[in-house]
Length: 146
Image 1 (cartoon, helix red, strand yellow):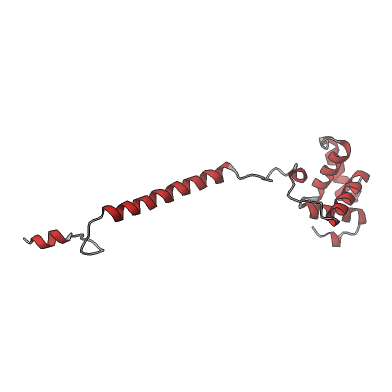
Image 2 (cartoon, helix red, strand yellow; image 1 turned 30 degrees about the vertical axis):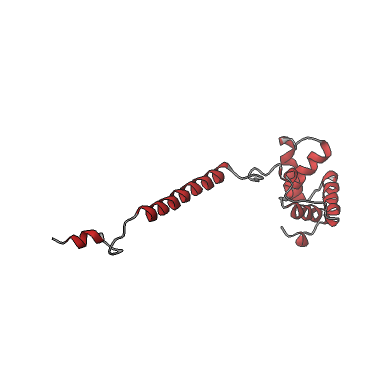
C-alpha cells in the first residue's frame, strides 16, 4: 500500500492507518465501524461500503475519524500494531504458537534425546574393534589364531 500515491486525501488517511496497523484498508474500515457503532459491520452494508470506498473513493466520517485517531496515537507512540484488537478480522493472524509447532518441537527433542543416549550407551558398552570399517574383528579374536 502506497499512501503517497493516493490522490484522495481521505483515502490517504485510511491507507496510512492501514500501514501503521499492518492491515488492509478495508479492515481499517471494519475496525472503524466497530469502534463507532460498537458492532461488527453487517454483511449487507459491507458490499456497499466496499464499492463506495474502492470505486468511488467515499470515506465515511467515522472511518476518517478512526484513521485520524490512529495517526495521532502513532505520532505519540501509543500504537502497538501487534495488538490482537487490530487484527480481529485477520483469520490467519496468530498470537500464540500453534499446536503443530509445539508437537514438532517436542518430537525433535525426544528424537535428539534418544540419539544422544544411544551414542553414550554405545561408547560405554562398546568393545574395542581393530578397525572402523567392516569386518569388525575384536582383538581377542585375532589373538586366538586358527
